[in-house]
Image (cartoon, rainbow, N blue to C red; front, side, top):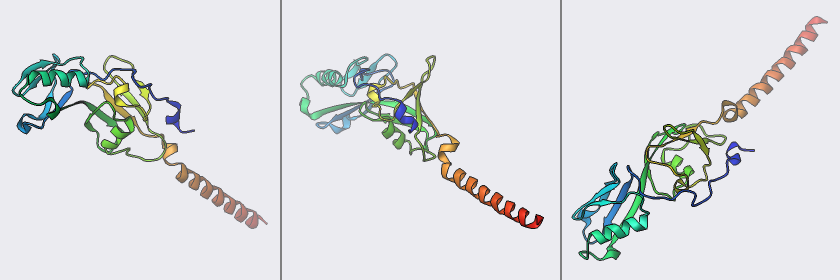
Length: 196
């Protein structure tokens, strides 16, 4: 049985996907494209929106945050012309081809996040994935989990562990073993013939 199958996915809705310090608010103002962009949420949970100013968004859901930003424009634009998305920077390290910080939304799966980081370095077997948080125990998660259901913060790291050596090289090990058996068989036959 593959190792990854032993870790059950986290139930949906376990953690709310709300704005935290370090998140990125992607604002698209279709009426005024120059007011669009990626806006960082500072350590106080405040985002600076062009022509609106500072808005406190800490703890808000994406929908509530969009309503607050639209209210900040106070009738200057059509609310249907504003799109707001919430992204969280997640550090992906370990057995991936391109360890890096990836911007993800809550619906992104752990497997998709690993793919965004270039995929696993060594294919073969199931990768084990861990959430590493300062001053907290490391926990293993399933690759089927959605990022929004894990309670991951922007300061957390996703560590991808390589499959064990035996799993990655099972065919080569088996071939070497069979070759060694064949060689020992030939040596035994040679020895028995030379002895007589």
